Every structure is written in C-alpha cells, then in structure tokens.
Length: 324
Image (tube, rainbow, N blue to C red):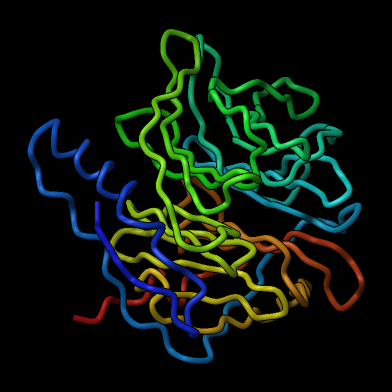
C-alpha cells in the first residue's frame, strides 16, 4: 500500500484520505509475509485537451441518474440508480436486464461477481435514502434487482461510499462516511464464508475536510472534498483517476490527483455525449465485450434532452505505450 501525504491544491479535486487506513492496509499485507507493498502502476502523462469518443449508450432513460456502478468478475453489469428513485441493471450492450426495482438510493458502488451458498450472483453495495448500507443482487432468473442486508454494524446514517478490490482477503473492500461525521472514512472487507456474508473491519481514518466522494485507486484510498463522483481506471501498468465536479468537464489524473487534465467526450456517429455528466464509473479491463481498452461510463442529459448512460472508449490512454 502506498503511503501518500498530498495536500489539496487548486488544480486537483482529490486529497489522499490520510495515512491511517493506508498504513493499516499495508501493515496487514506485510504481517502475512513481511513483503514490501507493490509500487502502484505507472502511466504516461496525460496530454492537455484529451478527447475520448462516445461509442455506445443505453436507450433514453426514465429520468435523471444519481449514481452508476459496474461489476467485475464473470461478465460485467451496469447498475443505474435514479434521482427520483428506482434501480435498474443493464448489460454492456446497454440493454436492461429484468424489470426496474423501486429502491431509493443515495449512491451505489461498483460490484463483484461471486458464489454464495452454491449460487452465482453479482453484488453491488449501496446506500439508501434513509442512510442504510444494503446490498443489491443480480442473479440469472431474478425478475428485478433484490435488496439484502449487509453485516456491517453501523448505527449512524451513511452519507456515501466507494468500493474496491479485496484480493485474497474477501469479496469486496468498502469505505464509507456518515452524515454526522463526514470527515472520517470507515473501511473494511465484505467476505463470503460458508454461504454467509461477514464483515472484517479495517480502519477509521480522519480527514481535515468534509468528504464528498472517495475511490480506491489501485491499492490507495483517495477522498475528495469537491468531486461529486470518482472512478478508477486501471489496466496493467496504467492507472488513472477520473472525477466529476459540478459544471466542469470530466477530469483525469495519473498521479492520484496531484495534477489533472480535462477530458472532452466526443459524440459518436449516433451517440450524443452528455452535456453535464452526473455520475461516473470505469473498468480498465472487461472479461468480454467490445471494449478492448476498458470502458468509462457516464450518465447525464444530452443535447436532445434525453437522459442516457453513455459508454466511452479510453483506449487512447489505456492502450498507449508507457513512456519510460
């Protein structure tokens, strides 16, 4: 785990979430084998004026989108939570899977495919409008997304969350902050043991700013006081942060937010890009599908007044040779 002590500067929407959680992750890894943590992937600097193409999208949606998430593992699924309530799952062709569910969510985080009690499923962690941590399940045969309780002992109202890889430690790593303490990130690992989900707490880390979003970038937890949404784009030796701020273009950084560049989304042949994206997620690699360089997913209203989720091709940066 990389330990960073960067401070927020005007050009950057991100601040490292403080050393406590980072140290705990690193010490846990070292205690099992006394190995030095891996260095993070390196990437070539991003050129100013980067432009990436919109290549596919969903059909027009029922309304504004509040949060989007994708799953990793066997196949990839897209979860879409709406401003006015409602949750839908889509495949990577932009086609809706099953019927929408009427859950009201503040946020949904990237999910994982797993097997629990001999059943294959995809689990997305999320936060309800009432501030509860829940899980949202897709499995073949379900008519609509299903909500389950998560074994995370938290009595306070949750404000937001992010998720990341757990490696051999479990199914998924989760970080969240609460309404009453938006300067502290609580982290832990959700595990699947003998057919049951369990929670392995890891840390509570204080920041000196109110948290608006967080993201696991490679093996580093990063938080932002200004970005309304964030995503990690990691592919082999390429690692980048993507972020959204109100009224600004998408931003990209290859140094954990110390410097950023704007990303313009170019309309596809039949795919108009969103004017002001409201939600973002990304995957650097997909197990199947027509996205060889990974995919960035954003939601928003386009020039035609339609709300869509748009798939963006980041191959120009993820497949670009790394400069020595």
